[in-house]
Length: 65
Image 1 (cartoon, rainbow, N blue to C red):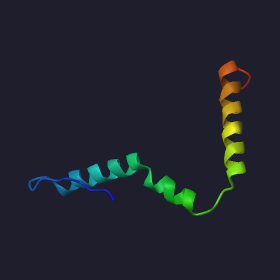
Image 2: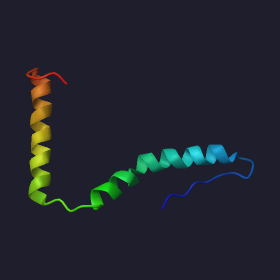
Image 3: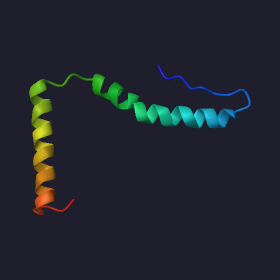
């Protein structure tokens, strides 16, 4: 749960802006999307390996981003 400390004299727009920033930093939306469907651990590992290979190829200059 996100809690925003706002002062009495603070504008509602500023409080809303603080909430949105805190919401993005917490990555709540990404967690919700990840929980919508189950992914097997083997598929998670495979995707991390493929990402690592891609990053390595970019670092060596084989492919351009």
